[in-house]
Image (cartoon, rainbow, N blue to C red; front, side, top):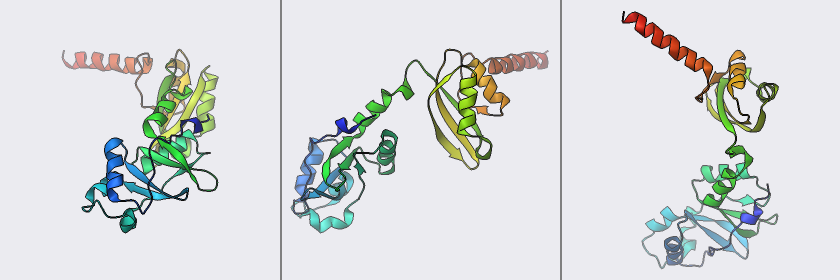
Length: 219
């Protein structure tokens, strides 16, 4: 997926010689978390909006507060998932984009990126999301794929969504009308099913047994 067409240039970058009040004005006009500093097309770093707000003398030059600079960016070859990780790691809603010469070319906006992800096949409305859990040493992506495809399903996307000690959760997006066979096969391979599905016969059977046992105890 080519996401470079979503690179924006609407927000003006600043230089170290610019006053703090210039950064304050941009923050008031745009709901952004960071201001970019660019000198002669070279990206120098970012000031966070929260840091800008703490500066009392708004007439000071930004250079005076260079110790507050944060440094993160992506390049034009960064993938969608890598981009989402950078957003999360830096608690930002705007990320500078640099070319191969480290020149500033624009930025990505978080809301645009999330919209791209929402429209991807991984979140296709016709698919089913299944989350399974197993010991990290006992699972493999090839096994996960084999279970789904051997049951007639097609994987649209898969990733490790959580890790707790030795236990990992795998989120799988599947194109398949009847998830029942796939769920039962995962159970036969000792995977724990985390997501709940209306047509999960195993859970329905457990519920029926539980209700029957409860009635027996109340007799």
